[in-house]
Length: 173
Image 1: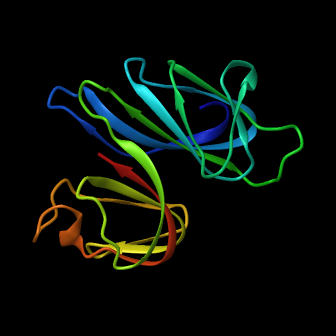
Image 2 (image 1 turned 135 degrees about the vertical axis):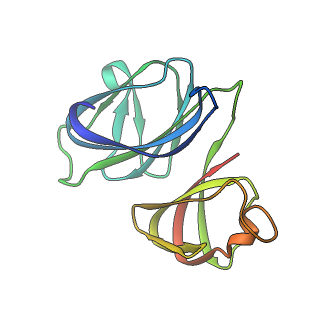
């Protein structure tokens, strides 16, 4: 990320020839502004998941807060933090997908106990609390990447997902 921050790829799906179907990235903005290069042939969905609000686009015309989703078009994503801001990082999830190949969505949810999840959940990003599935556990600002097909009953139900008062963002579809 040009400017001041970090970008981490969480998960995604590519075709046999390496063509992008979808990709989920975490952007952590530390400084007043940053620019991220995005796949040009993809549609993008942004979700604010932590820290101060960020302005999105040229001139930071649109504000993105925690627990909000915004659709974005363009090959460059400009993010700006307010002049007066808290010391913590601004965190944004970026879901890029090529509509002809995949159409995943970002869904905020609160999970408790043994929740019933859609069969097409691809990843769970834990914002607070704890989520366990398939022998792995994720806590705040960690992600569980789920297999395309879980052993047993198929889909997510075969993983035995258990949540402890978790606020999450799921990639579905």
